[in-house]
Image 1 (cartoon, rainbow, N blue to C red):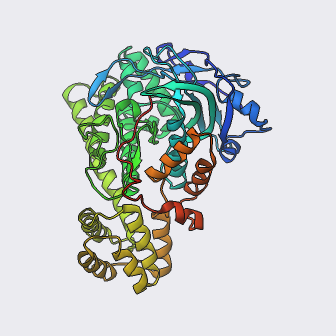
Image 2: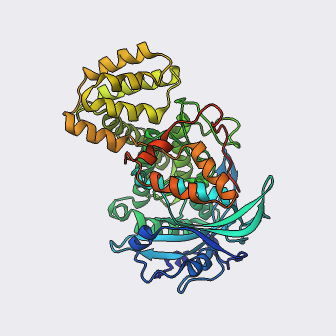
Image 3: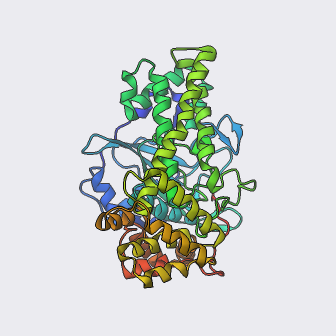
Length: 486
């Protein structure tokens, strides 16, 4: 079905180890992303039973050569010299019609040489969460890994309690992480150079043309990470575990784990049950990304043309550029979300900062607020204005803001509403809806999962079903903590 290649295996073997998947009992296909498979060049897609065997690890597809990838990482600021794919196997790479290379990886397929005593399995819940959230992110225009398949294992995975197991198949531009470079650096300069040259050839060929290709690589990754985090925050997304081993060199969102979407706006919001100190809170994400890039820079310093203090200064200057790239992307997103004219950058920043303060004080739901504002922007109808004011506990202050916004540098009406609709989704994978889908699946009913998947995969469409599932959680439905599942 897919034509596998194996460029990554040309790198030194400390970076990867061949490993066979363990297989599971009675695999059953939950979901298969036919549109993504077609994009990857899949032909002659087999029946569900065959797909279940392939994407559970029970049967290796023709041409696949499973390997586990090695990497290190700073986890909550503490360096761990060897982590690696403890429950994941790279089947191989495929090249699409545009010549772009993608990894195909199983998650939850059993123990590997990097398992460190773990079982190599995945509970069903994290598989369904990653499927839903990654497909939403792709549809919303956020760089992300993608979901190709989910397979139920008919086995129990023990975490706090026994849970149903599953295997997830992920597609990524690559699985090279900041932690991969940290791992390579521990195996010597030549291993790091080989990895850096591979990444430049695969992701950033423009860097090869620069006077210092490795400094240019740092600059490319810095720009991608800044743009990525700005896009996360425009949707209220909180990654939850921004360790260096969860920071993709390609600039994609990877390793969703205990991720969540903020509902009531709060810049200090944390969902992850393991982030007890709030290191990865919503507002901390840009600073953490910049810190991770500094760790990446440390691995590249020996490769750069200029060594010593001057080399460090050059790298620091590049990393400082994160802030400019982040602000540029955030400002462009703010202009779109508020329906302002393209030149209204400073106005966008001022109005958005005021609105975020009002959302926080008024306990306003972030997604619902921008959706309601998008509707009000159509024709400034008083009924729609009242619907927006009903979302806050401080209606007078919001009413004053709406007056200032309406008198600002708005885009022309038709373009304004179109831009706002593209920037402000009708629906996000709300935490309680994801939980509902997972709870039903644990009882053997996957209908809520498929229903939710359909609407979050088209998040700007105003269908009746999307409107139903877009409603914010009631007090009793709120999800206050999310869990990793590893």
